[in-house]
Length: 279
Image (cartoon, rainbow, N blue to C red):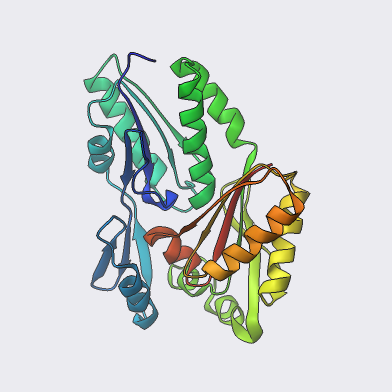
């Protein structure tokens, strides 16, 4: 692997546009609301997108990268390693697999592996970091694939949402359920399930109770400190409050905070907090 040209790829729900020191490509997804299409790349005006989505009264949807988008991201690499948003929310993984087969047919000596994260956002960030760690260990392609599949079974995603409006507009939940969230300061705490669905688990009154419930849910699946990635949609205060809770309880915490980009901001909406962590 040391002599190979290696490319890391992910769709833009990873909330990363670049990765310092690594040949990395973020493949943009799209959000569609009526006549407006928002491309989740470096040029996206996120506040304008969120404003447009609030004003849009009809249905909205997301569009995954095309096979061609994935092939462009692969470039001319000898080895491509990547991760996608859960296949239960998007056709992104399927498109990446078609691209992988086409790429290897055109480049018989190349090797491509794209993991279905069964998740999104900060959990995907953990996967990319693990790829980098495994490459640094000098492992073979086959060893990396085996190790990343094992590792992905030990990572998790929890979230706290203050709105489910776009889930309703996307047809994933009923408008009645969405209308109940956000009233009386209700927040939903949930997780990415083992099947790759986003599963609401608890209704909490206010951010304080939601953060306590988030931590309890993390510990219930084996969190004992270690690596955590927090991402939020214009709610840095809540993210920092939760980061402080984690630091006070776990001395060995390794934590980052970042803003959600377009795709995660579409699903999670303003005020959201997402937590990717190792269990």
